[in-house]
Amino acid sequence: MKVSIVGSGYVGIVTGIGFAELNNEVIFIDIDKDKVEKINSAKPPLYEKGLEELMKKNRDKYVATSDYKRAIEYTDVTFICVGTPSKKDGSIDLKFIKSAAVEIGKALKDKGDFHVVVVKSTVVPGTTEDVIKPTIEEKSKKKSFEDFGLAVNPEFLREGNAIEDFFNPDRIVIGAKEEKSKKSLNELYSSFECPKFFTDIKTAEMIKYASNAFLATKISFANEIGNICKKLGIDAYDVFKGVGLDHRINPSFFRAGIGFGGSCFPKDVKALMAKAEEVGENPRLLKAVIEINEKQPLKLIELLKKHVSKLEGEKIGVLGLAFKPDTDDIRESRAIPIVETLIKEGAEIIAYDPKAMNNFAKIFPQLKYANSADEVIANSDAVLIVTEWEEFEKLNYKGKIVIDGRRVERAREAKIYEGVCW
Ligand code: UDX
Image (cartoon, rainbow, N blue to C red; front, side):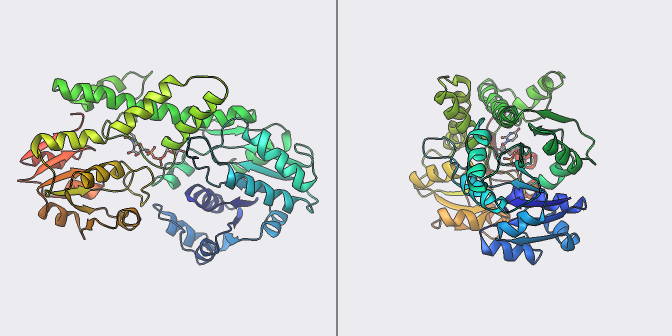
């Protein structure tokens, strides 16, 4: 099929290149000229494991442009993959969604053939039918579900594993109303053997939020139990090994530590909370999930102070700045509140991350950044492990004070070792 993708963030680029690998023709539409140029030179616009290779391999199957009209004219289906950031009050900011809908509407105005628009961006329930649909209708002067199709197909791609997740999904959720859209999406995903769940548009939007909110809840739950375990001298990882063996519970996403960051969980839980309040519901559990997550990174500092009572002037090493391994993304990284607290307390910080130092230095230019993890260990009195990069399992921690927020087994050899929840 011929597919266009609006927005070349990690969801858009991975989805598009994934469809190209499956022998579809893909056009990326992005207003950022720099991204367009990069994609057209087969260079990833961001770091994502395996992406560069896949872009090179499929070079003849995709192209990028800023021209909505030509891209939409040429393709059968357009995926909206733009970001949905949070506003200051936590509610969803639809500015990118709205401008994509305006441009798609304008481009559809002169198109004769039926075209399917698919919302892949995470949008609160009701957005597709109450915001995107009227905008496209107004600009295109066409009728949705008759002249053009509109569907929702949420993504469940983890950054750093996005390509693997694209090709091996647990399920594909499709929220659609009319047959032509269902047929197009069924065809596009025909080679996937996982369950395909067809539902209505609003339900598909909610499935994405309920999934992310549940996973975030699982993490905050693990952290709360983990904090109790720590006080009782129990290893939370052993506890969750035992708990996860119950098939009703499942072992994954119980990695207790310093909490969740990233571009999805914090923003999606807050957007769902804001929507709940808008409709007169008090999301008590979700509020607790966020509260636990905001306090959790500070546990690392609390434990550090058990061994280094005054941080002023102390050399503190920070290993890991990305919100999780295998990405350069620092959005909502737990490293941010940790570093802020260390700065406030007057510590001398030396930090290292294999991929995220450039991004981190944009907000914290005053830190000392090391060239390697070894350099951090050699030049600090105590070390905090904030992200579990694989290479941190190969370091020599002997003789050091190590406070581990992410369970790096090798660090247990340190002179003094503390795990947050174990
Ligand atoms: C998440 C969802 O997993 C994905 O389905 C969705 O579409 C986008 O958001 P992502 O944010 O890329 O993906 O990363 P994920 O691997 O889910 O981790 C999110 C955060 O939770 C990280 O900071 C990670 O360190 C933390 N985490 C994860 C834990 O603290 N414990 C766990 O057990 C799992």
